[in-house]
Image (cartoon, rainbow, N blue to C red):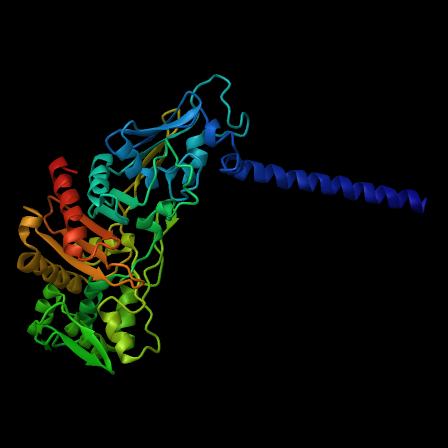
Length: 459
């Protein structure tokens, strides 16, 4: 009897275990079944067997960027648009993790727990995704990059709608090169550099050093520096591109004087510089449509004076993310608190029901209102006194360029960040061109092109 009872007990435990396991499976199936089905390794959902029922991806004007046709995933007939929109749309195999075809694969694939990834009626099941991005503007940015590596980002700082998000190197998703995983030409091609990369900032970081001075020094606007072309700090020589003579902070920012900002960073000190950088968004990640961005980094803990000096001019170990720089420009334009950027305008299922709708909402304050106003005035002076208003006709642009030394025998990266203070053209941008040398001559023409075209299109 004891033997029989023991066997029955074991049987009951096995039955109980079976139902518990079944319950766990059914819960996971209901909760995560769509994610399981749409994983890149499921060849029915990707590759040459792309779903015929998957939804479309469209730009802000309704231009179809990707759709399923004849059992395959097809992209725009315009190769330049395919390349320009690659990192926003994503590739068929799902290797670009920031692309909507991967991030929203459950919605776009049309999965349901009954029929899975098939449609008994042959009708499309997948949801359509409309982006806030302009394929026309993105094409312009891509063409202006002209084969160089880099990133271009722009958004409407009043509505939050991203208009441009272009990253290079790239590839044609309709004709994926066979050597994409082996050729150095395509190194980083799966990476959306607007969201997932960080670069040495160079002189664009002087905006942060200026903000620290405004917040800390009561005499910041009357303080002057003498630039003889270089300065020596703690035995380390820091050079300028020119001899600027006697300059105040306003003039030093416009002339991008390394001597002034190196000395200013040392005067402010590690604690004040770090506090301002943290306030302005360094050392933390941001989220856009569920995607966490790469961090901009500022770390001078225990740094010697010459290292602190270099950090104040955007060198040392400073790193900046293009999306963060665009967001920071939007914050300054908006009185210190940015509108949260987004690039998913709408997700609508096959029944016409809106599943997700982009909306305007405030982000986290990055600059105090008074400092934002002052920074805007100083950046406006950069344009009127140095870059020239003819660079951005009729838009009252406030901007800063940067030339970032990267070492390793490479040419410096070129940066330009800024925004239009004209309420009719509320655009903020960040452009970086790898090995572009001077930001004014490499990143500047790209910024000019997309800002001018956005105004013309009335976006």
